[in-house]
Image 1: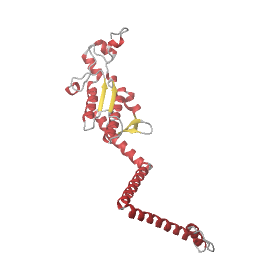
Image 2 (image 1 turned 30 degrees about the vertical axis):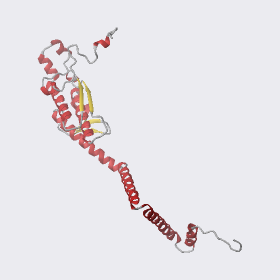
Image 3 (image 1 turned 135 degrees about the horizontal axis):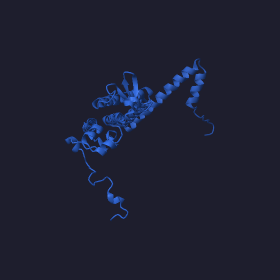
Image 4 (image 1 turned 90 degrees about the vertical axis):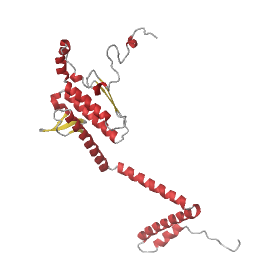
Amino acid sequence: MPGRRFHRPRDHAVRRRELRGRRPGSSLLGQAEAQAYTRCRINAYLGQISTTTGSGHLQRLQADVSIAQQRVQGREEQLDSEAIDDKLTHSLRYVSGKMTSHARFLRLEHGDGLVRLNPKKLTVVTDTPDGITELLRIGSGSGKTHVCYHLAAHLAVHQYFTANSRPVPRLLMLDRPTQPYGPSDTAKARGRREDLALVEDRATVTGLFKLMQQVATEPAPGFQIIVSDHADLPHRWYQDSIRYDWRGGENLIPTTWLDINPTP
């Protein structure tokens, strides 16, 4: 309108900066004022939500904030190096306990010591009177000893996976674990039962399958062990575990698949 002048309202932020510049210690006062101003704005916004949309909406927002904070805390704990080391130590101790128990059950050489995995060298080690001994130096390089220790490690690791509900298939498949105990060519040629019994070391072979049977039937959700082997033990628990017997013309691969002109 003629004769009247309108002034544009000054920005609040500009006014606060001008006021801070006129007082001593303006930096600290300005920071405190900014924090107080921000809190007031947040309180005003929350108050507006409470009055316009009801307290239920505000409670839902507060619940969402709480859930988000818990997720952030969980991610921070997962990335904490100390927490990671603690979890690794706990896991290795669990596996070591199982491995040591299996080694003693099988009466392995140096099995009386602490048997464990070395995560840096990715191998099996055990305590001996001479110190820590790696798998390659146990049993003078015997294949029989190595098979038993490998089996103990596999079973222990899968027991840990199952006990802690880790996302790993509940399946362990082994192909001829008793091969080092098989009869030599000389024993096969002789065909004498005492030679076969001596070479196969039936007591150890029986222990291997008995250990697998115990682990597979312990209170664990659906853990399965599949073994393909030539061993044929007379024990009832062993015979009850056989699903397929590829002997007497029965083969894993049907002979008809090998025919040059297979029948339709």
